[in-house]
Image (cartoon, rainbow, N blue to C red; front, side, top):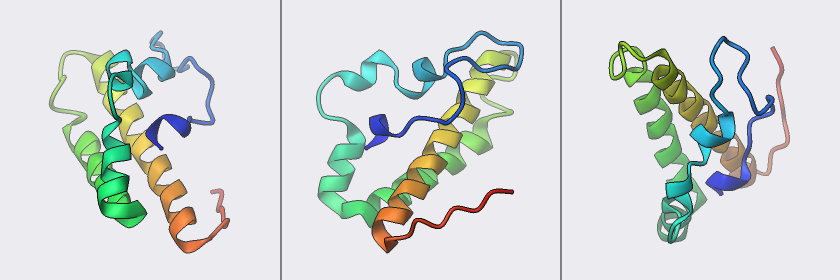
Length: 105
């Protein structure tokens, strides 16, 4: 699940850093063994995974300004991870509630 949802933006972020989005969202160490999201989904279902990704989004957002205070690229990585968690939550919500509603703006 986690690996199948990609941001709608380009592979490179356009904010003055040269950090590939794919590297942050899907690092190599995530591809060894069973993905934690797959385990969570099989153990707790889509609704349990939804709660998990929402907690992750909060975690990455809250730690963003503090954990890597002197490293803007690492801070940006946390924001990318938060965005990916929110995107995963949106897809899970659509799946759970059979909703295709999208609001822009």
